[in-house]
Length: 302
Image 1 (cartoon, rainbow, N blue to C red):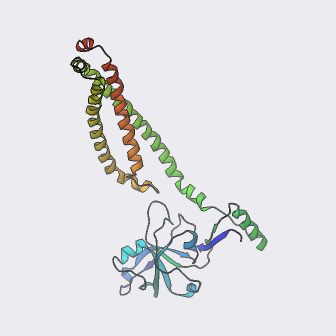
Image 2 (tube, rainbow, N blue to C red):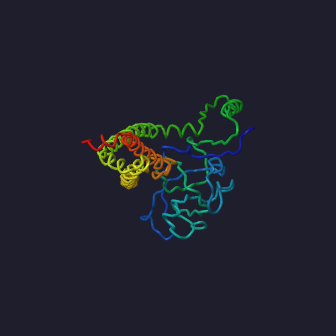
Image 3 (cartoon, helix red, strand yellow):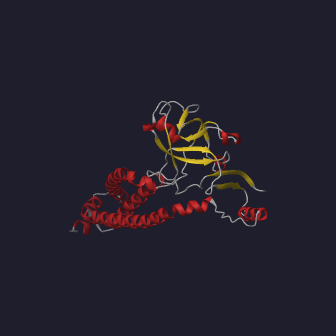
């Protein structure tokens, strides 16, 4: 078909809620030492469609459908072969030994919350099989539907972009993120307003001191710089404490974030910049107003 780049088959679409498991054991182990691992049957083009690279070894070949070979992901390789590369070694499934011919990069093919050890077997068709296409045209779904209808009008197919499947998976997290974002914005606003009020009060309490400094010849710029520097230390101490608390609590958020680190420097930097700006403004305006007060009146201020 025009526009089709790569084609692959899989026993289910990624990511999927369904999980198939199989038992295996290492050579020399008995039946009581069998281990359970998730398994999926894929064709050679499956990894190309999803752009999952083969890190070590090779991909499946068409002739592998009748051969006892498997691929495994990084997680499975690290769990059962900590140091040595398992490529070329064998595992026992049932009574048959299968050779590991390659290691593929970890991918979120069975959910977005975690990556589990995965075993890949050569593809064989089943009622749950999925055909995966990577195309360059936006209207490829219509062309695919028309092509299938022309081949066999009795066939009913459902065509779903992977982006739509991903959006369904992310929907609960997006709602939670929106609610958390709104609450976080309100908390940040309250923190900024509270800090503004506290710093304004501190400057007001130092009105008499400001009057004395002005009477002794201090310039307004010097007084404002002094007050901003004093309050800036309090802001920096608060940001340090808040950063430490955020780092400590970030581990709880890690499993709910996709494509974003819980220690995202942009988010931390924006919050720090906003609070620091609020602290500077909260000091500058009252200090500027105080420096314009008559020193005699400032000295009499209680």
